[in-house]
Image (cartoon, rainbow, N blue to C red):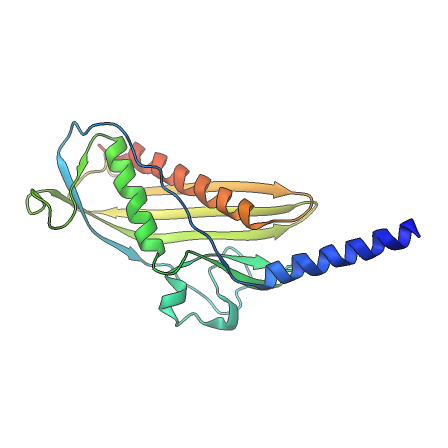
Length: 213
């Protein structure tokens, strides 16, 4: 009887996990605001362009894709940050930012925080000093999270942004990366994705600050 009960519980847990993996998850990612007072020049973030290339049913989970092969739906892909996987590694539900938020907007928050961490005053459009502030733009080459199966279940996040403008990078290094990892022997739940993305954006923020003058 105990063995049968264990089997039933295992099957139910598997079905529950499958249902979660098949659904689309909307996850809010936070970028803590810096507390240091600015000591350097004023900077304006002019543009952050999402240059990620989505593919239909890619072989590698590290390549961005969305459920239903809606790679032409920019309202969806602009929010997409990852893709869940079933027990056999097949692609299932999307992991996206909430409605009204985009990856470009999130990366802009990371850039703003990194600039402030480095001592720059970030000026918003319409604020005093915006016209004369130093301009900074960026291209998002990669910003993605994915599942890999092995002896354990592993989710990985990687990002790559390319800074653009007449400044402010030290030497000629205009690229910054962010990475994060999480391993589980049981299952990946939404809180794990949130922790992964928060850690990944935190790592990107730190690395952006390192390449700034």
